[in-house]
Structure formats: C-alpha cells, structure tokens
Amino acid sequence: MSLRSLYYLQSLPTTPVEKPILPTGTAHKPLKIPKKPPVKIEYPLNCSAGNLTRTCPRNYPTAVSPEDPDRPSPPECPHYFRWIYGDQQPWMKGGITREMVERAKRTATFKLVILNGRAYVEKYQRAFQTRDVFTLWGILQLLRRYPGKVPDLELMFDCVDWPVIISKDYHGPNATAPPPLFRYCGDDATLDIVFPDWSFWGWPEINIKPWESLLRDLKEGNKRSRWMEREPYAYWKGNPAVAATRLDLLKCNVSDKHDWNARVYTQDWIRESQEGYKQSDLASQCIHRYKIYIEGSAWSVSQKYILACDSVTLLVKPHYYDFFTRSLMPVHHYWPIREDDKCRSIKFAVDWGNRHKQKAQSIGKAASDFIQEDLKMDNVYDYMFHLLNEYAKLLKFKPTVPEKAVELCSERMGCGAEGLKKKFMMESMVKYPMDASPCTMPPPFSPLELQTFLKRKVNSIKQVEAWEKKFWENQYT
Image 1 (cartoon, rainbow, N blue to C red):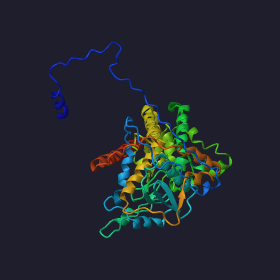
Image 2: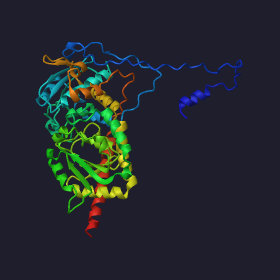
Image 3: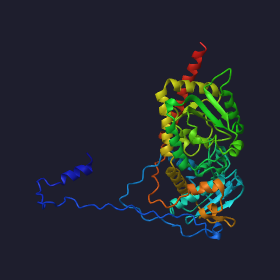
Image 4: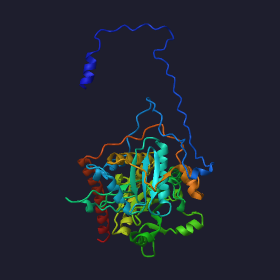
C-alpha cells in the first residue's frame, strides 16, 4: 500500500457517522444531464468565385475550440512513432540552422514553409507524376485537421525514392552537421527524415484510391475469401523492370521444370490504364494465402497494400524502410525471405505455412490488424503532426516566407483539378477541424530497449534461416 493511501486511511474517522435520513424518492446522486455532442461545422471547398484558384480564403479557423474536460485522454501513439526521435537525433544537440536547411536544396523538390497555420511552397524541380501534389495536399489536410496547432517551420522535401544524406559524410572531428531533408524512405546508411508517402491521399496515375476508403475496401476484400479457402501459393504482381531483384523474382514462377509455390505476374500499367484498371483492383487480390513483397528501385508503396491482406506477407529482405515498417516483427507480422536464394526460400515458406496453417493464418491476421488499426488515417495524420512538431523544436531561426514562394490552400489545389486527381482530392479532404488532441507520443527508446528490439528481429530471421537450411539439407540426404 502506498504512503498516500496509508495516510488517507489513518485520516478517516474511527467512529461511525450517522447518515442523514432522506425523504422517500429522493435521489442519492444528482441527475447528470448528458451533454450534447458538439456540432461539427464543415468547411467545404468554395470554388464558385473565379479568383479562388489564385488566392486563398480566410474563413477557415486558425485555432480549435477548447477541449471538453470530460473527454478521455488521447491514447498513446503506436510503437512506430518512437522512431521519430531517432530520425532527428543528428540535430538534437546543436539544433538546425537556416544554412543547414538551405544545403538540402541541392536535391530537394520543394521547400515548405508553415507560418501562422498557413502553408507556402517554393518549387525547385518537377516530381515524378503527382507525388509532390498529393504530398502537399496531405500537409494542407493536416493543417485543416489541427488548425493553429502545427508550429511555424521551414523544411526541404525530396520526392525521389532514394535517400541521399549519407551518414558517413558527416562523421569525424571536422565534419559539418548534415542538412535535414524529408523524403518517403530511408536506409541504415543515410540520415534522410522519413515522411508518409503521397499515396495516402490517392495515386491517380494508377487509380489507387485514398487510404481511408481503400482500407475499407481491403477489409471487405478479406471477408470475401477466408484464408483456408485461398490458393495455397505465393502471389506477386508488379513491374519487374525497375530493379534487378524483381527480374530475379521472375525465375521463381511455376514452369515445366519447377514449382517454387510462387505465382508471379508482370503488371503492364500502360495497358491497365487503357483497359480501365480492371485487373489491378487491390481489394480483389487477397485470394492467395501468401503475398510477396519485394522492393523496386527503392522501397515500394505496395508494402502497406500487401500487409493489409490477411494473407501471409513473404517479405524479401529489404534495404529500405518507411515511417512505419521499422516496427514490424519477423514471424509475427511477416515471413522473411532470403534475397540471395528467393525461389527456395519462397517454396520453404509456403510449404511451412501449409503444414502449420493456424500459425500462418495468425501471421497474416497480425499484419492486417496492424495496418487496419495502427496505420489508420488518424494515426498517419498524428505521425505527421508529431514529426513536424519535433522538427520545429530544433529550428534555431525564425521561419519566413521566401520571395518566390506561393501560398497553398485546398481551394488553390482542388478547385482547378480534374479527373481522378480532383476525385481523390475531394475524397481525402478533411472537412472539419478535430475536436480532440492527437495521440500522445510514447517515450523514446532507451539504449537497452532499442538493442533488445533489434536483437529480437535479427534472431527471428536467423531462426527462419536455420529452419530453411535444415529443410533443404534433408532434401539432399
């Protein structure tokens, strides 16, 4: 018992206290009148005025109303939020100067400035397809979701896949501090700051819906085909031409000589676009017990779509990570596949899963639960919010709007958009401010916690490789 509890007990009276006699029908507790939920005021796009594609309206709130004190405390953010601290570790000691930010301009696609809750952008080069457009659209929706809460900041963003801030270039007694540069993925040799990718708000070039509605479709797709009834093979469909490792995967397809338990298909995106994307509906592709994830030229946005199936994700050894994948655990969320011996590794994985159906099914379920809960759109926005807040704390200068920057707002981007681009923007638009706070940041990893977590991942992979090695040795004895 705590001292506080003991002190409280000792302070209670030792003689019984007479209770007052209440008249018949008198309530012991005052009636509590339930509060009406607050009315949410929607702020739709106003595209009626001709000049709204050039100027931004001022009617959207710049601050949120005070929170209801009776509202429960926000939940703790998912585990992967803890990597935010590590991603900003290079600047924790000395902070970030304007000179450091400007050095990241060398490869940046654009500079983003947030000032008093409004966004300004200076573009330096064209991005592939609409990556920059939907990344900026997502940031605008964050500002609509949490008006007045996102701090003033300046940052550089690179929309190219490959991380470029090489860690070893900034080590040593005479090394300069690295430039902070945001992008969609990183690896163990670089210091780029990872940020949610553009496809969470839609990918019109290949008809991939915004994440919130696609997640519902994927959930319904899982229900249409129970795991035990699915094809007992590993499935992959994609563009193999972007990387040698994907071309190597084609060798694992079924042939007259071998059946590696893989069913691999080449995706022709030009033909798909001409035929209305009839063969690329993601929610209809959860019909195999196993699905293969393999990187392209770098990390691939397909990873979240594959993990969202209840199928077991067979994850070919990755070299890159995005903002959430570092918290995935081998043999719990996915099955690790050797990069240097893919075909035999895939065959062993499928044979193992078909012999241990309950365990395999639980791996697929753990991954889809992770995607549905920990990667729901609320958490994507909250990750952006906390990442930008932690980054802004490190700035040693007052953000200002560059001379060549333009103000961005949902009207300026959405009113002039057309086709799928317009459709996806309207579908993913935040219509009203949140009346609750973001999730609560978990603490950073202690050195021991991080070491234990990483060691567990390594040991899980080694265990699978040992099982696999023994399996193949027995085939030849």
